[in-house]
Image (cartoon, rainbow, N blue to C red; front, top):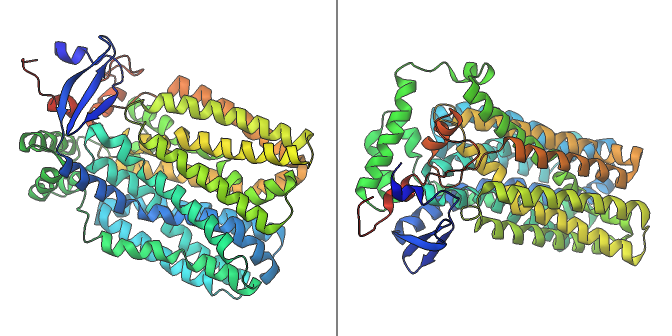
Amino acid sequence: MSSSAANFAQPAILRRLGRTFCFWDWRNGEFVAPLRIDIRSRKYVMACAFFASLNNVLLGYDVGVMSGAVLFIQQDLNITEVQTEVLIGSLSIISLFGSLAGGRTSDSIGRKWTMALAALVFQTGAAVMAVAPSFEVLMIGRTFAGIGIGLGVMIAPVYIAEISPTVARGFLTSFPEIFINLGILLGYVSNYAFSGLSVHISWRIMLAVGILPSVFIGFALCVIPESPRWLVLKGQVDRAREVLMKTNERDDEAEERLAEIQLAAAKTEGGEERPVWRELLSPSPAVRKMLIVGFGIQCFQQITGIDATVYYSPEILKEAGIQDETKLLAATVAVGITKTLFILIATFMIDSVGRKPLLYVSTIGMTLCLFSLSFTLTFLGQGTLGIALALLFVCGNVAFFSIGMGPVCWVLTSEIFPLRLRAQASALGAVGNRVCSGLVAMSFLSVSRAITVGGTFFVFSLVSALSVVFVYMLVPETSGKSLEQIELMFQGGMEMKGAEVELGDAERLVRKDQEF
């Protein structure tokens, strides 16, 4: 490594001064190496990330809207508590089939058209749910919606990671999590807005509104290009070069990135690698490390109980003492605003602070909030103080989740796997995420009846404490590395624990008066 690169021995903080970006040199204590960035190319990449993330609004909206809509569905269709758990939790279980299919589908028809397919399938499901006359028909619609969400959730981070420049990959790859949170907030607001309608009509309108975000996917297809890495895999090098010319500042930078992608793709084309699923099921040591990190972080994201907090926030706050339905739904809006606000904060910190520090703050903060919520619900009763503290700790839990575990989970999964495995390995991680989400959502009411709501959140706090250990022991820092460098890191070619951070294409963009 060059002597100048050695100055970047710690994760860099990026400062923008007009059109100039500078990195913080931790060794010398100053901003150095001005980095000229073409703002137009960054706007283009941001637009691609924006439109690619629209499908994630669907997942967020379903999570948010179902927390309130189920109150009216119970009254209108006379469904039981068990049916309520199945209705809420089944979407996550069903979505795993969409995620599993998404890996092969995106490798076959492309990342872009997989997003279109996801939107179409979800629209079908949402329409069926909105007119459902019975629980059985409602579940048919739920099945279509779940498959569509599974497709959309796994492909957006993969697409964004493959199209983003290294210096902004964490920022851009966190867009899907932002849109999930915007969807949750939209769902909460929809619940509150339509709660005054008749029981028969209110929940149908709540669910039908979910069709609207997917309509914009059609417009998105006219704007976003195909992933350059997928194009290279399909032998469409000229089209890949055109995309890279738009997403990178200089022609030589685009050519260098294209060469890296072609080198990674050549292994598969040259027959050096085993079939994808065989390699995932019987992995090499390097791939095994990737799977443990990717699959593990996805599972921990859900088994710490975030979906229970969001789906059942009215039940939790009712346990704390809020009985009026309108007040319950209004309180959930506060939860949604908090969650969305902190994911926006995380988005601007994920590349400068790094993935791992945010995970530390997130997991430790969640552990404290979950334990405090458990204590409040168990010992403080249903008085004014109990209500205030319960709402505070629910908001605190979603805030700490959104500052780290929420966005970083998807960023890591999309960037740690090599090109030949990325789509299907990310799909496998999404499957773990959805299975854990479904198990938590489908069992929360039953477990709460058995050990109380407070006891359930005490269990979540213990699991969250384990996630702190997992992050410390196994999760590497990937900030500032190109996707190809991250692959090398897991293969042992770079230090795993991040004592030295390569800046990849960021370093190649540095312009200084002297040669490196």
